[in-house]
Image (tube, rainbow, N blue to C red; front, top):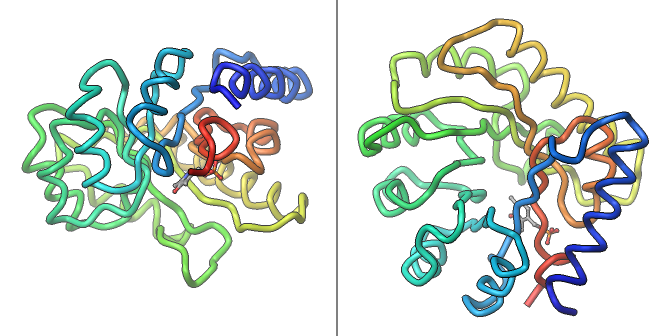
Length: 224
Ligand SMILES: *Cc1c(COP(=O)(O)O)cnc(C)c1O
């Protein structure tokens, strides 16, 4: 399916989800996750109006960036190793997966201006998942205060891969509550206004629960 058709379908569903809970569609940023697809398909996505592009590996982001450059806003959504920070830091606009001090230190050291970062939270407590436990998030953010190039704009999570709608909803609600709590701290380095949550199979529920950034791969550009 071409990206324009997929995007039109997604936009309709985004609008319906927003209407259900009285939100505005312009509160939602759709990030096209291109990790499964070629540069050509990524360029098709950009021509179709998806200018926010998400990649989860430094090598792949670097490869696509070399051709696409600043025709896209680049989101790093995967696990970032501290030794790879230097490879992506001059290319990415947003990092969604910060969960380690060693990575924060590298970002601070290598960036030439503040980088917008989401803290990745393992809300569901699944062992295989990256991210901080919910109770670790505020202490971690407070420790980031000296790092002037690390700006915490929000929280990110990956919901468990299940069909159970109530479990998905609970995960998203918990992340939203944690975001509210941190926002109330009014930390100048951590406005923490955004929620990066929702993928191809659960973005409508995520929007109903407050997502501001949805990360869509397979339903938008395809899975291979
Ligand atoms: C792959 C990936 C996505 C997109 O997954 P789909 O289910 O294909 O939409 C979103 N977020 C992260 C962190 C990913 O790794």
